[in-house]
Amino acid sequence: MLQELLTAAAAAGSAGVLYIASAARIVKQYERGVVLRLGRLAGEVRQPGFTMIVPVVDRLHKVNMQIVTMPVPAQEGITRDNVTVRVDAVVYFKVVDAAYALIRVEDYKFAVSQMAQTSLRSIIGKSDLDDLLSNREKLNQGLELMIDSPAVGWGVQIDRVEIKDVSLPETMKRSMARQAEADRERRARVINADAERQASKVLAEAAREMSQTPAALQLRLLQTVVAVAAEKNSTLVLPFPVELLRFLENPQRAPLDQTPERPAGM
Image (cartoon, rainbow, N blue to C red; front, side, top):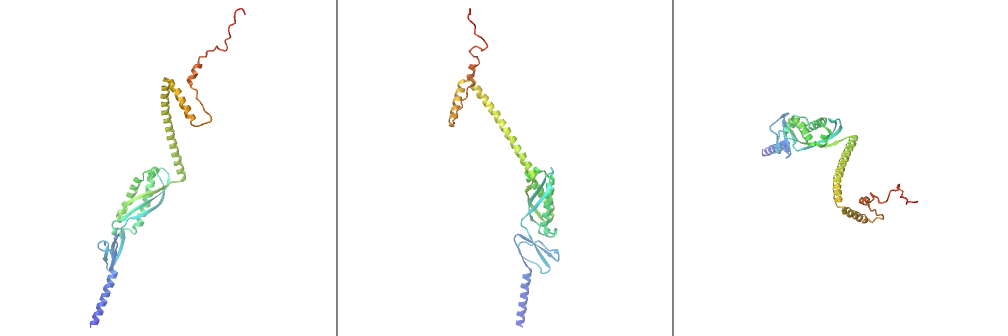
């Protein structure tokens, strides 16, 4: 009799251990458990740690709650100013409601990916090329709102959307390079013209000062000679002051077309 009781107790213990082993589940810290009992949502979402389900009847689905980094494939489109571009982006999102993410959408990752591609093509068609190149922050916010609106009903929250790269055709790149080169040349010419204008004012002022003091011109001439001689050139050029030509303005000799008067009686 005692042996039969021990056998029954051992069998019951084995069955209990087997039941616990089949019913026990472990939910990790970054996961949430959703239990479907006979195909219907049962109870609250299971929190991280040890949990129990009814074997055969219940099915536990674990949903990852970590932030997912999803690259958006490059999308080709035509901007509002008729330029063909290829734009790729990256989406950061996470699940905030595990039950919604499991029940309301078949595959929330695929759904977010398709919505991101569609929204990116829509953004390309509504934007100018200059906006895509220089005003990305505003486009990122608009793209985030377009993706987040339907994702809320799936239990998914969009954290951030970033446009990674904008690829342009080679002809457009060459045109932009020529435009930038022409703009730099224009600015260089303006700067040179302004420098010439300022230099002319300074030279005119220096000329007025030298005209009041003729000796200053001679001193300047000597400084120029010293500067040229310091170069150790084989040829030395000495400028001839223009003031010295003033002595030749009224020649002292008689003109060549006048003949000298003959003495009387000859």
